[in-house]
Length: 136
Figure 1 (tube, rainbow, N blue to C red):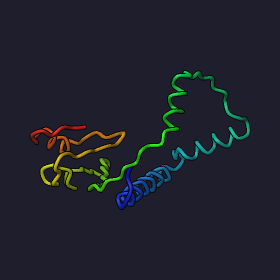
Figure 2 (cartoon, one colour):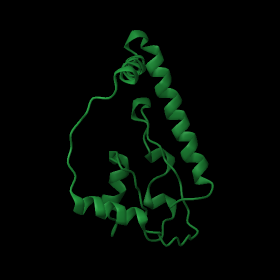
Figure 3 (cartoon, one colour):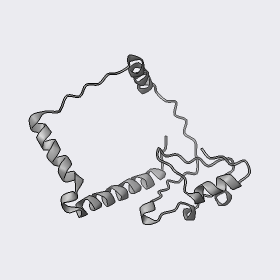
Figure 4 (cartoon, helix red, strand yellow):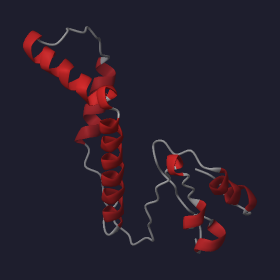
């Protein structure tokens, strides 16, 4: 759970990416995929959705419901936190912004989390060269 000023950075990055991607779609003219999604939705609104059969596993449905019902014990602690964005299509690299354990003053660990995090060579290098450093 994150709160505080870093949320502004996350919102700004989301807005920047969203605006950029909308601009890219609009620049494609008739190849703008939003045109086709909108046309498909209009047809489905008139014809109804296509029925798709699926099955569930009660054990897994119950497990998900139990996880959703849990109230996490939130224990906020002050931490130095940065939100970093790597934009490879703009030749972005995180290292120049300072993600190196050697030059950021981390006492015990640096945690990098993202569902799609793939470290660039400049990020992976410090974790291989610092004694006791480990990638997560």
